Each structure stands twice: as C-alpha cells, then as structure tokens.
Length: 182
Image (cartoon, rainbow, N blue to C red; front, top):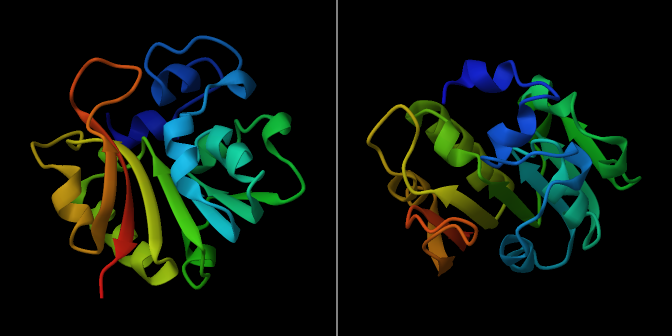
C-alpha cells in the first residue's frame, strides 16, 4: 500500500485501511489487548502511527501523557472520544525527535513504511526510547523485505508473544517487545 493511500485516507475508508475489513464508527475500532498488555505503565508514551487514536486512547489509561503521531490525514480523523486531556496528537515528527518516552508503541504501521524511511524512523526512535512494542506484519509493502531485520539494527528482541495476527489465521504477523541495543 503506497503512502499516497494513507495521505488520502478519509472517514469512509480509514477503518478498512487500518484493520482490513473493519466497518463501523472509527471511535469503536477494536484494540488488540495482547499489544496493550505489553505496554506497561509509565509517565510518557508515544503511539507511532496512531491512526485514529484507538491505541492512543487505550494507553492514556496507563500513562500520564501520551502523544499520537501519524500523517495529517489520519490525525484529522481522530474522533473526539479518543482525545482525553492527557493525550496530544501531532504529525510534526521534528517536534518529537528531541523528546524521551518511557515506551513507544507501533501497531500495524511499520509494514507500510518503505525501507529507507523506516530506517530513519527507527534510528530516531532508538534515541527517544529504550522500550518499543510492535505489532506488525512480517513483510514490508512494495518489497520482499522483512520488518524484523530492519528493527533489529536498532532494537533487540525482548519477547515475541505471537507469530500471527490473533484475528487472522495467516502466519504473517508478530506482536512483541523490544529493548534498545547498547
């Protein structure tokens, strides 16, 4: 799926783009509890590729401050219900790069980022946090490249809890926690 698809996301197609086959209100999109359970409690968290804020809202219950980051088209679709007082949303990556987070969550986003841009983001994330929680398809759109080898340049596997999407019988997803290398 090209970046242009995400840049042109709208209220009619965003649900299906985020969770294939999802139909319904964006505010009612389900959260993968298996992912949120890896996100411990803390002061500050970043939801990288937050989409319409479903995980951002879930994190707001366990963190003092949560920032959701995504493309402007996605941020514009965040429902009011996903905007509690301790959550901020932004599409300005440069404003985040100097911040530190107790944990960064990237759920169902890395597989949509082309290799070089993914390397750039992971480099920055490794400077921003020691703890990364990922839910991703194993392969990257537009290529035969795999997500984990790129992630492992910057973070080491702490645990992989699943090797498939809990809602999909295809063995092409993982959910895990990672620690910064070094």
